[in-house]
Length: 401
Figure 1 (tube, helix red, strand yellow):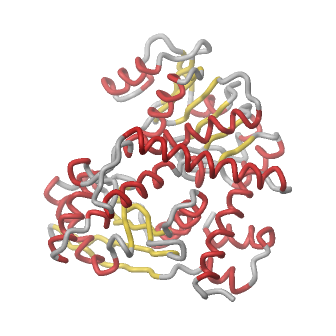
Figure 2: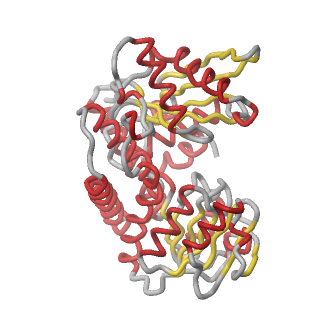
Figure 3: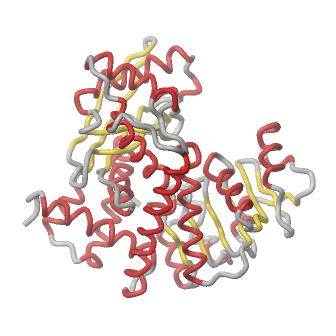
């Protein structure tokens, strides 16, 4: 669903006026450039959607399917994500239409630097702060920062986040998405009084594998995990450290010998108390939502549940914790990195974890209070909360009467 379709659908629930709907529907700035590397031209974008609550914030992705509409959609959702997490940031997104796997290391560096040369006037720690996204890495962020500082002639490490530690990056960033989701899940489990804690995790990349490790150490029983090649299941619970070892050695969780092999589709339908989709968008659809048996769905992936599927899950009284909250740990620690850079300081791992937990627990509890008083599901409550915060900031700035 495009962000315009989403806004048209939620406008009556949020009682949006025509000026409010127009403001929320319109990105403030859309930048496009053609980048030339090794005789080839690549389309590049930076969409700055809204900065009412602070400088624009959002990742840069390198992917062959990147286009202006996708980047604009993602920039809108970043606006809501920073708002729901109560961060002093706005929303943006960037991307290059490229398959980075087809580039040499030298070409990848040149493309990264070319992106900054195209857009550097619109970036900076007080303007717009990019970060890694699909197929971009801390090394790419380091190249981009170096190019920015070379062009501008000034040190500004806070102009980009997700950097290597030795280049001004933040501790905890590597596990931030999973850790934030874990803190939120712990609160949700308490709120609904969930006694059994069996978990199925779809996706075993950075977020999924770190979530599996965190949950296992906390006493949850992770009964199933999956990757692109398939899924594995054990009613007694998987040995997560062993699964991680096998994944690193063989490239797939499916090589774990003492677990049953099942499909990704079967994983979604397991009799597990908690389902954590952490891989692809639109994994839960109207075709399989009725078979979901979990009591909590924690959306660690972006957009893993279609609107039609969400209605089915709500009818089954399943608590769905939406992606804009569930995976906001990543952007929250990115915010912490930016704040450390601005202060020219470095926080300890324990301090970052403490602040991350405090912020996300407070946000969840505020949303839970709103949810208990409203007639809407938890996802809609989170959306309305974020929209309200953005519009309040716009009014303070005088952009809305």
